[in-house]
Image 1 (cartoon, rainbow, N blue to C red):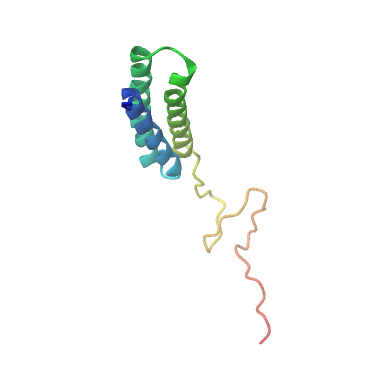
Image 2: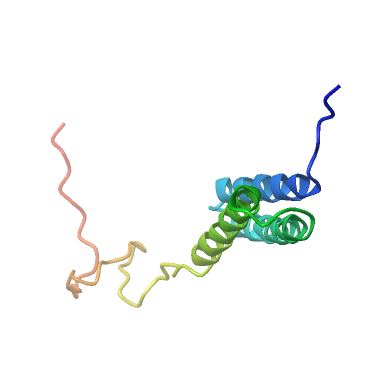
Amino acid sequence: MNAIHYDPADRFTLTSLLLGTIGLLLFILPILSVPLASVGFAFGAVGLGVALVLGPRNWSRLRWPLGALTVSAVTILVGVMIGYAPIAEPTESRTETGAMLMDWQPLTPRGYIPPPRLPM
């Protein structure tokens, strides 16, 4: 009878891969994606350590933990980049109605001039 051998590193690795992937799907919300990916990175590091300690050091045993670490690291990087992206703040060049002018548009001393009405 063949016994199924489960590698203990697989549990940590798959947890890391799952958390990193969920974090990557939530990249638009860095407050959720960065902590998920950080926990996933920690699980991936533990999985890599377990794979190095318990098993033979060949590429086929290390590819899943390294892939999970990569996904989690990319998710952390994307989340931090989204979190520190510049936010468009209103400038001093505002019209009376509050519409923002582009930098290339000159300021008019008359303020906002509405378009002509359509004939009825």
